[in-house]
Image (cartoon, rainbow, N blue to C red; front, top):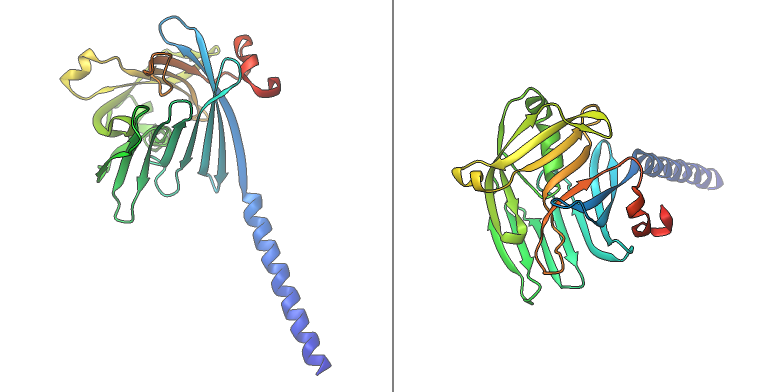
Length: 258
């Protein structure tokens, strides 16, 4: 009896050791990446806010993504959470602007459909639209993953076309993107991408301009319509720059000067 109990104890000990080892290995493969963007008005270059991104990355994939927006005094004005999961180009996400009650986002269902939802600042009920995305589609910050998926095509100078889902308007648009040569950021060459509506209407709508590090494929700058409303309650065109060091005008907006 004593011998049987000893063998059982050893087996249990080995099992628990293996379990702890597996959990430790899983935790060790996850890492966190943090970076900050500095938002300015596009027309006058006036500093307006910071957006601090925290990504959890496991096996090369972003599994969790949180963004905190702060005004020039460091007050939190908005929060966004994204869960890319199996849909990196169209992540589940939720943007919340607490002072106004505005909420927007996207959620997936088990059938492959996505639901765009929004709660306007003067409304209390959620408005929704459900649709099946096209094969070439992206939404919100998922455009970042979509660029990487089409990196070689873009760098070769070819044009890509895709469906872009806009949760705040419960709409989808057909866009096209193409690389623009000759751009630099902080003195270094970058891959600049121009994104515009893929229709004649696009002639009258300002394009989005994004700049990516050529080696790391990380976003360095965004120019286009923002998602944080101004004093009049409307969103406005912005330039969000992901500088390697915080600019002087943004130091007060970063907690503890970090």
